[in-house]
Length: 190
Image (cartoon, rainbow, N blue to C red; front, side, top):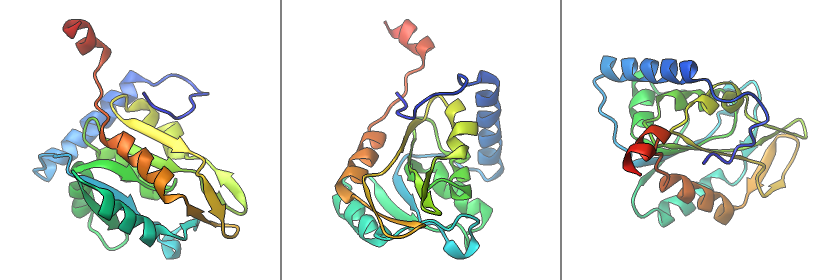
């Protein structure tokens, strides 16, 4: 189940339904047939960010993930130079999305069923900040595996961290094997 601490209202099935309908509408618009074949690592663009937090060893983590991934292609992206269609196509074929909190995470609305979102808290102004995107939106996607965590990280300044490669990779691996079975299907199978 989702590892994010749920200290707020339960997921709303109406919002879940709207998110899925919107995602499916965009899939149809761009003729997308999703496959879960990517692990997508989103690197925050500090030039175009309201909260310019960074992971200092992002490139090292990308290489670590690329060298250790057996079943998925690992992509490193920034959204700034990609068209909307390119962004949607990439996310529609993503099994695990790794991103710091913020607007970079909003493309997760286009994740296919049974995907995962791995989101370390960001360090901004010397303080840890959780993801409003998960709290407000993605907690309603009952089919997603969500791991929102305070990273085992070394602080490198007010807005930057260095993540633990092994710990973060193990979180991504857990997300990659996630398969959601709805309570209705479980009853029928059981």
